[in-house]
Length: 234
Image 1 (cartoon, rainbow, N blue to C red):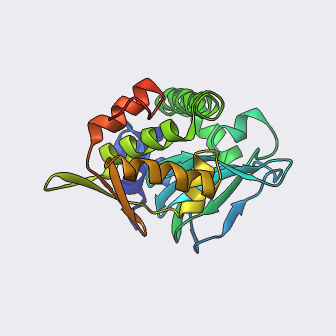
Image 2 (image 1 turned 60 degrees about the vertical axis):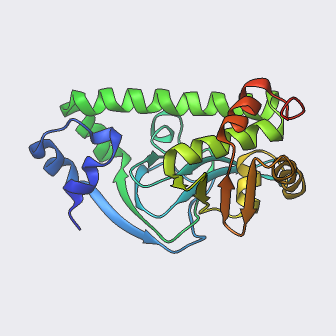
């Protein structure tokens, strides 16, 4: 594997010279994890962070009533656990693979020494952590202020933009997470998510089968996102 080329895909190392990337590649350890493997658990010592090279990883916490709340879904090229190496001695959440995954692991102590030598990485890290903070704020807003219909609409819009395939008069989305994982990501349970999907189907806005969702009325999803209620949509 060309580690330098893989590092180029990560925002954290964007803008670095080939020489800098070659230097960073020396501190990277490549690790492979099968599907449904816990990479680290909440409370484990925060000894390093990760860049996802392939596959998919979920970051989640377990509530006092044993419910799983997915905080982030990590896609290839994205970093995770970078905040933990600065804000505490332990990881504040679980990281588990959704698919067979390959990661680049970077040791905390070695990385901090690298930061001292390269201001570009330090600046990128500040931006990356700021983006992570915004995601956390958005998650709190979504769960506390928006109903499941709206949260589902926002998710479908984001997925349509990110990876949707335009086919004739509809957009096809292929989900890489299960219905249960999607419910956890949206901060709800399977039954409530099923009702939300059914309501959108009855309105003719979407259809769904197995791991695929077909969007027929993207504009109406956007109306739902803005209005906060499905009742005004004809």
